Length: 275
Image (cartoon, rainbow, N blue to C red):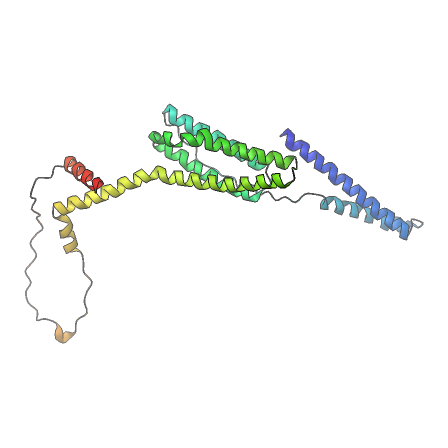
């Protein structure tokens, strides 16, 4: 905050000096042409000089290229009761808080956009760990290295910007930070997908097991046989003569073996996984 205040005071002083110089120049130019020998010249020249000074001070203001991150109101992540998982989540949230603070002082729209994306992805990661604390070890390296390195990288970018560092080396470093942020966001997005990959595979396996058991018990074929078929258009002359159709016998599947519940499903599940 002290650095930001110091930077603001310096900028205001610069704008004031530019306004005084601009207004003084216009005043001197007006005096050299018309002079201030009549009251009308004073009534015109002085306001004109003040207006010119104000315009020059406005032009001296730097362009604000900083795209401020939108305010995000998120529900707090619940405490899991697992010390390791809660420590990982708390550490990650603190790192992201410091990254957002760095972003507030970096006038770079692209970096702001990437930081917003990173904030969204990491929040989903933390919530996934809160739902299943056993997944906490999967984000350990991200909390111990990836996020701290990202924070250090953005801090360096901010320092270069504050000190107005120029030169080929500085510009090359800025481009590298841009590229690195793109990589970081992509990597965290892939990590989020990986965390849910096991759950997706379990669901797919459960579906395969369900279909296998239905086939073994003769239920899947019966369901397919009873599925409504699309009506076929027939001509009146081709329609068969009406005849009495016997009512279908009530459904009573015959099981070759009694259903063994979870044990049978577990055996089929192991067989499906081997396939």
